[in-house]
Image (cartoon, rainbow, N blue to C red; front, side, top):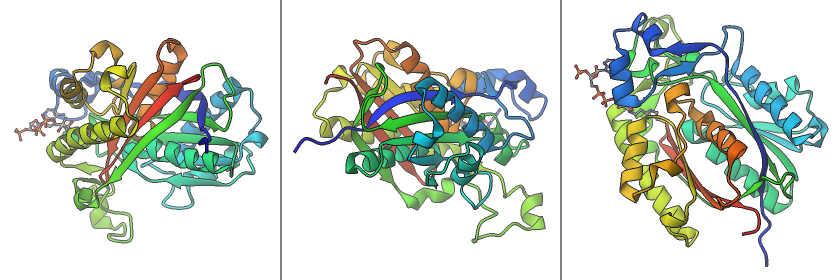
Length: 332
Ligand code: COA
């Protein structure tokens, strides 16, 4: 039996226009542009307006997507949203976005931190190939700045705000559509405390003390996360290539999660990937968590050469979670 394909027919992204440079951060915490650039590759990041919620960023990406795809919102069968900085603990950010888009379809969130877009796309693929839905809007949106502690220099310099959207369909709706081939997802909850927001959930409800200690903000053991990010992405890329029966040399373009240039370099070194074939935007937007790989994909698809037939995306995030996916050009 021929397996049905799930296409990414269109993509979009949205970045808030406020830029926060490293030199601006030098005035907020004890850091330097030199330290941030040499340890991470980040020069600046975008910060959402105070009154702009995560759902607003997602809605902006969604409007762009509908316009590019020339699709009416009534034609969307399902909305899936990936985020680690939701509008509320509940209801889901997807429901808020559904309301703001005046959509009538079902909508739900996927929580897989920086791997969220990979998990959401894989979920969409499952629905499409099962035949349940035809047009799925996958959104990843992050107002990470709303959960950052701007007195913690080891985290606040790394992240930025932004959103992306992808239209996943049962047929290619554009001539630049790509389809999702092999996918490898993984999780390991053993290390969940290495990157977390400790307070505000059922384990530690928000309290005056928690607020004073900024335990409602993101906390990270950077060295542990770094080590696992490299290890897990390398193993999931290897597994995905094996599943797809494809060699690394046959990958025409590589889209890694943009957390830190040094993580990307370690992966390139391991697989001897040509740096020219690798997408990077961490320098200008920092780590936009769940939206990171989707923003890269949107930037890439704008200029994708038709000869690029095999594209590999890989992400890693809190949980820990990770995911690798091979995207293919039409006709293969
Ligand atoms: N400016 C200046 N100094 C800083 C700093 C900053 N913004 N942040 C940390 N430092 C200091 C530390 O306090 C430490 O000082 P000490 O040696 O006196 O204790 C020193 O720099 C080295 O810290 P270390 O944590 O070893 O640095 P590092 O080279 O590991 O880089 C990260 C730190 C956070 C950039 C790095 O660990 C990382 O990228 N981790 C993964 C992050 C990530 O990917 N997160 C999201 C996953 S999706």
